[in-house]
Image 1 (tube, rainbow over the protein chains, first blue to last red):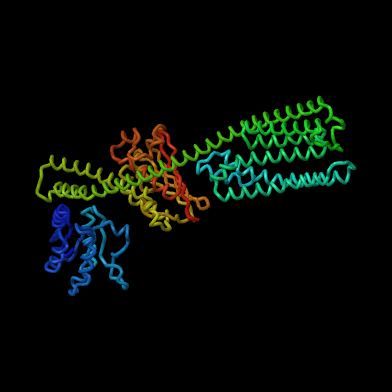
Image 2: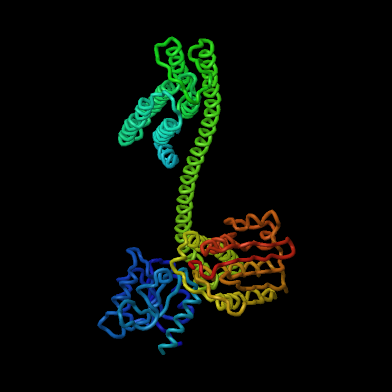
Amino acid sequence: MSAKAKVLVIDDDQDVLTTSRLFLQSRGFEVLTASEPEEGFRLAEQGRPDVVVLDVMMPHGTEGFQWVSRIRHHADAALRNMPVIILTSIHTTTGIRFREGDADETGDYLPVQGFLDKPFDPDELFRKIESILGSSA
Amino acid sequence: MEGSSGLRDSSAREGPSLSQVELAERIRWLILLRWFAFVGVATTILIARSVFVSALPWNRLLLTAFAIPTYNVLFYIAWQRANRAGTRYLERISYGLANAQILCDLVMLGALIHLSGGVENLFCFYFVFHMVIASILLSARAAFAQATVAVLIFATIGAGEYYGILPHYESPIGMQVHGLHRSGILVFAAGWVLASALYVTVYLATSITARLRWREDQVMALSQQTTDDAQRLRIAYDKLAETERAKSAYARKVAHELRSPLAAIDGLLRAVSEGLAGEIPEQPREMVDRARIRTHELLDVARDLLVLASARDAKLSAQWSAVDLRSTLDDIVRLLAPQAEARQIRVTTEVSSELPEVQGDPEGLKELLTNLLTNAIKYSREESVVEVRIGHRGTAVEIEVSDSGIGIAEEDQTRIFDEFYRGGNARAFTAEGTGLGLSIVHSIVEAHGGTITVESREGAGTTFSIVLNSNPSA
């Protein structure tokens, strides 16, 4: 694992942010947290995290969808290609909007690098981040 | 009488009495019958005229006979118009129409008898037919009144011919008692015999008809009651289904709302337990760990409730596809291997070759096998064997999960699929368990149109047998 890889966690649940921060820090990550999508976007632009962990369902609806859409259309290529792990169980029931892997040609799906069902096991999150960082290293 | 049942059915919904509707229909039958009667009368007259050299007024007889189709046409028109005017109007006039028809028939029969031998004519007993018809169509009182009319007509003929007011025509097929019409005592005797025959006929026929009508009314009342009961049951079922849906939606909502805070609680407790928020002494740590165990129990209930609600709502069907049970089972056995190994339980699987894929919900079927296998492992004694067999017979796929564990008491076997129910020995064996696992299994089997049975003996083990159709839509 790259030393002090930076993870940005965006979730409107403060407790999820706290525990994620504590666990990821305990495993050697530098952690940025945001409880609002806008704040998360700003942190992504300024902090340049290696991985973003993003909750889909936020107070105003499925803002996570818009967040991924925005980042995937960002002018900055580094941000455009930033790995995103989605925290949701929605993808298992709708199967739309997100797809694990690269951008598809039709543009119907937003590419993300992983899904985690909420509530998630911190160990699983850790393994997921590790595998993403390992494959992109 | 065809079509009467249709009339009866529609009227039963609108409410009028059965007998009225039936009467309206039988009037049509009576009109039809009269055409045959006319043909019979006319043919008889024509044959008699050619066979017997008698002084009967054949032309007048024929003319009288032709009165039958004439008034029958009028009755037919009246019936048609009443029919077009609607059921209610038809019902209102049908009783009068029936009375009028029978009355006309009696007068016509009287005229024909008079012209063909009077009281000596054996056809006078044809009055009996009219009495039977009157008894069927009319009330007992009206039928007796019609019998009285018949007797009066016969008496008029007898008296008229006896006193010479009416001419007498010798009948070629009469009672062969020529001059009977001139003997007062014989005329009276003939009248008495006929009158008693008519009244007895009416009495017998009305009694039988009344009995039959009563029975028919009973059957109709029962039928109506059954229809009403079925309707009430349907409403009750719909309400129950609605309540079930509401309950399911509520359970799903509650479970969903519970999961996030419970997961957050677990995360926070874990952070405390692992010292991520600062070192804590051993005893508080143990208490936090116990709190985590209880939180996990709640998370399990919330998760099971969500799965159960999904299975009940048949939402699973939206995601149906061909499921390979062999690989699903392999995955589950691999997943549960640590649990089994921890208690030295051996899990054996036997899957028939050429097992067809099952059209179903992959997640649901996985859940089904996981729950059955988890239960089998959980309630087995250490160092025992759990067997899973999946075979097929035609399109029927048979799944069997057997253990030699604690078994299920006979009195518990009917309730094991109830939500939150756990058998007494299961609770005693382990505290762990939401009591929802078998409810989920049952709901998934139902959603797939399959069946599930259990065979168990307390202390000896349990076998769950499931039969699924590999292609339910076929």
